[in-house]
View: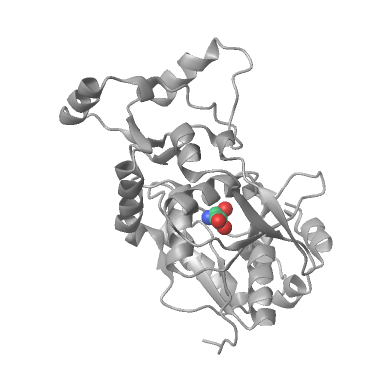
Length: 297
Ligand code: GLU
């Protein structure tokens, strides 16, 4: 562990559901360098709540790839799958404040409920906003279904949550240089989103907010694809009485056709590039466009 001379804490938090690509390398190096420049700490966190899709083999590959890149991080590494009870406590806190409700709907039922309504709004991830079916269930019916063992997701009651959090919800966004700006949060974009699923007892949103607080993260540096999620994260932080980190959402690396590098678009993995002869020095030097073109994602 390197000695730190400030109290700033950065983290790189990949999901272990595939191999890392150059976009991850960019984000990890940025976090690592910012932590070093600030005299702060650099943490690695494995986001593996999706136990169906996350694999130990991918987790091992993350350690290997980041080590190959020359990064060093503190141990033990926090793996989210070992901390479901932390997320459950946070969820219970919100429920105790009357800010959640159980939802028994299947994906198909939600689609059916909204399909006839043209122009039905979608959340930033592209899912239709929840039409509120289970929000209006009679209390007795809710209890009957729970007692019958029907699996339920937990949803945030967004209207009640926003009312409770009050006005002026915002976050501090850092730019390339030292300047920061205040961004007004718009959590309503997410509607009554899920905080736990039928098959997974925590959503990404609640897990990330709880972990950033428990790990004392002061600076969240991540891809701009998560910019709009920050509205929801700020809301949860306020409702759970958690500190607000500063954020920096960096641009995403794109391939020659302009498509962002992602696991789903089958961007070439760092380990495949390594096999092709790519050196860590080339990645550290950040000639991204050259590397992407050479890698031919
Ligand atoms: N686990 C997320 C991902 O791999 C990143 C979460 C975050 O940085 O907040 O995309």
